[in-house]
Amino acid sequence: MTELQPYQIPLVITFVLLINLVAVPLTSLIIQKTTRWGEISEKYPLRSEFTGKWIKWQTLIFRGWSRAKQCIAIGLSSDFLYVKFMPQILFPYLKPIQIPWTHIIAIKEKNFFLAAYCEFVIQDSPSLTFHLSKGLRKSLQNYSGTAKVVLAFGKQNGTFPESSF
Image 1 (cartoon, rainbow, N blue to C red):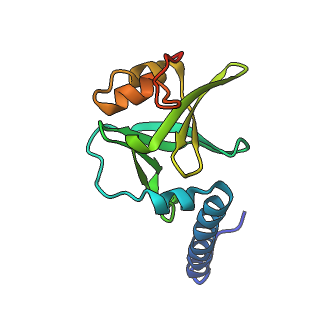
Image 2: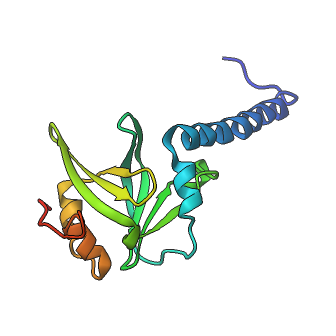
């Protein structure tokens, strides 16, 4: 293997910077267009910072075929569901979202072989489907306020039937 000559170092740095300046925005744009993240983030932009503990390394499933595998963080408060890509430095153009619990009209539990999924059906928007572990789904029930009500029950036709959480 040959060593880099002193005159080659600026060329290598320039090449790496150009790749990052093209690849990161292009990847973000592809994710926005193919997954509808852009549509959701325009409708539910982050208006206030989440101050609680983020539940990190979650998987988000878009349209049943596209996945953001273990690069999603979820934040829960009594009023909002917060979702962001992480680490944010890799996804600078994919804005975090803040969805009011009142706009989540149903949470459906789905099972596929050994995996369990939670689909958050959002009023007038594409739904979000999360792959959450059984332990995490149980720990979500411990959150207080509206979040606890919504996560414990799926709202359907104005009623709150028992769910299998």
